[in-house]
Structure formats: C-alpha cells, structure tokens
Image (spheres, one colour):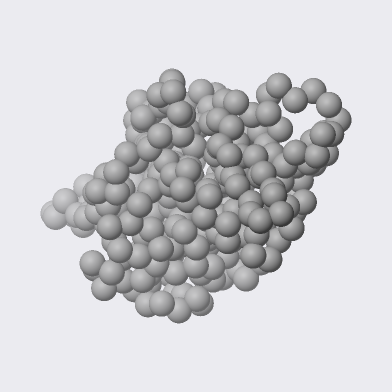
Length: 292
C-alpha cells in the first residue's frame, strides 16, 4: 500500500535531486555558509530568493501523486496519468492536468475518458539543513513549517489562487467538463482565511475538495485542521481514507451546473422539468434547459 507524505519523502526528494542538482539549486545559503531548505525564523541576516528548486519539487510531487493514485486506479482497471492534455476542456500542452485518473493511459485524452482531475500543490514542508563533509552529506531536520519563514504548499495564497483559477478555467471551457471532479492535492493545511472559501467552492461544485495527504505536518501535534465544516478541505490520515474519498467521488456521477437567471426564468425551467415522470429525467431536463 502506498504511503502518504512524510519527512522520509522529503529526504528522498533531496537525495534524488542531489544526483544532478547542486546544493545551491536546492538550498538557501546563509551568511555563515549553511544550507537551509527555508530561512529559519531566527535568521536575521541578508536573505536571497531561491527559484531553481520550484520546478524540481514540482516534478517530484507530480510523479509522487501519480504513484500514490495508481493503486486506486488499478483496482478499477484505470490509469493514473501525468500531464494529461484535453483541449476541449482547457487542458493544453502549456497548461496540462498535473495528474488525472483516466480510462486509458494516453496523454492526450477525450473528456469522456477522464474520470478525476488533480491539481498538485505540494512543496517541502519541513526545514532541513544540509551538512557536508569530505566523505558524505547529511540532512538534519530543523523543525516543521512553523519553525521557518516560508509558507509551503496550500498555505501559500498564490498556490490557492492558481489552483482555483485553473479549476474555473476548466469548468467554463466546455460542458464536457461538467461531470469531471476536480481535486486540489496538497501536503499542508490551509490558512484560516480560506476555510469558508474552500467550503463555498465545494458547495458550488467548482472544486470537489482540497485534500492534504500529509497526516502529521506538525512535529508537536499543534493546531492542525482535520477538515473544514463542509469538507472543502480534508486531511487524509491514512491511505484508506484517501481511497474511500476517491470511491465516493466516482460512486454516483454528479454534474456541475452554474447559471444566473431571473426567478421567472428559473420557475419556467423547473415547471418544464417537473413534467418528466422519472426523477433522473427531471434532473436531465433541468440541466439541459439551464444550459440554453
């Protein structure tokens, strides 16, 4: 069974990356020549910015997510695919899906073969110091995200806004996207300012959830949200919880619909839809009319 995000996964990232990347591409360098994953909160000297790690951790976490979801996909004879392109629903080669569960393993997909879309918003959560000697390198964990000056993963407002923006773009690209669930996959909690927003996005049907696959992002078991009031955000504590949440997404197909019509228009649509005998036919008629 696949493992959720842990400190060991971050060690794996740095170990693998050091095979081709320099310490300067992976770490901040302090005034006394120490290598930090993030600036410690106690660090007051001159600071530089680090952009070179972004693409590396992005590729690593997308591949990690593909592997994490493949076990679930395989049970249904589906595929976990990285970088899915489907121009009909706004997924271009320049802005492809990070990960998708699909009926086929092709990169270029048809909307009807895409079952769930995932936008991956993960990064290094803990702070690490790289210690070097002539013989070896060692990674020392300096503390969780409350011990450093960075905002990792879903704690970054720009990450949240980019994920929301991309999801809306998919939703408004074509009605073919209306039945595809969208999940934002992270490895941190979200800030309190986003609690109501993620619940609203889920209730409105735009995004079906912001899920963290890091069960213990804080070392001291400090305040660490499990879920928001309406499950817009959920922290997955074990793999089975992630799997059960995925099963719920696909058990009963749902459809996104959005409109802004007068009460008179809505009344007419409801009246016409209600003439159908079967309850599902009523829903189908309603959805068809509201899209006109």
